Length: 176
Length: 176
Image (tube, rainbow over all chains, first blue to last red; front, side, top):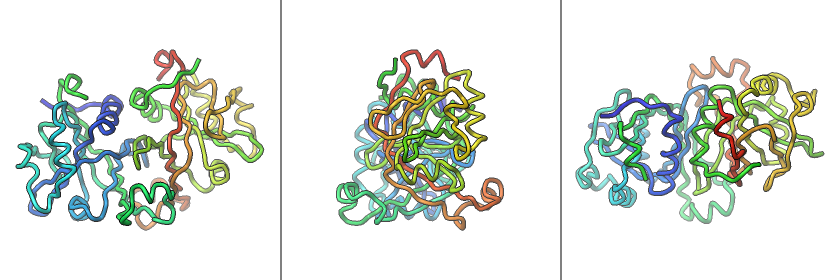
């Protein structure tokens, strides 16, 4: 059973899990087929008085194409024990396979956005893109460019307004 | 006594206080004189594997000038009871007055950045600007433009790498 929670209550666990194993970003194609991608970077906060989740996606990613089409996404915090899923979704591209099927993930309809959530995860953010921008290569610190952008695949940053945050009732016993 | 803490431990309280009353952003001029500005918006997260604090500052602000010169800042979480300070620092400009003096705030030397921290606050983030960009007016949602930018004073966004996070030992008893 998933219940609405306060952003402040789950933000610590979300950042902690993002740093330890990663989170699962879900987007959806025009036919309604969802795709999950692992993210290790992201921000939670407030802009324009709107609670928001910021994600960074490289143009080469399949998720980039879906985000550009659907303009919404969900972020899902994996439960303890989902390391294999997180690792798989961070390695394989949704262009060539159905990661939900491959990983036995269950997609559940979201309340406010087209992209579904992952039932097996414990905390969920539903987001609608409100602003996006591309990192300007010349403004990125040099140490960062050589480390993270050797092929010039600079991220597009998406600021998504959080429409809802909810969690498993017993999420605290399932965190990393 | 202030002690180092994990980002995940204090991020919930930080967002909560930001939403309820505001946080105090401190920057410093070339002569070393600090200035505090109240912020109600901001993000905490990870980019390029670096824990970071994102702030938004309008070009008209005195803080904007200081940030452009010093390239670093601190974010300070006020203790319960500091409502008047937060309100004052969100109303008056540091161009015309010394807000630290006016509010009886004590500036303490930071460990890694030029901008000091505010002793009376309970949680502190020291940050160095790693990336900045200007919101593009044409890409900001229309409802946001009319609500927040009637005079076209669009924010510059600063992504600051968090060099240190520390807190009063008894900060939990002093939060909002």
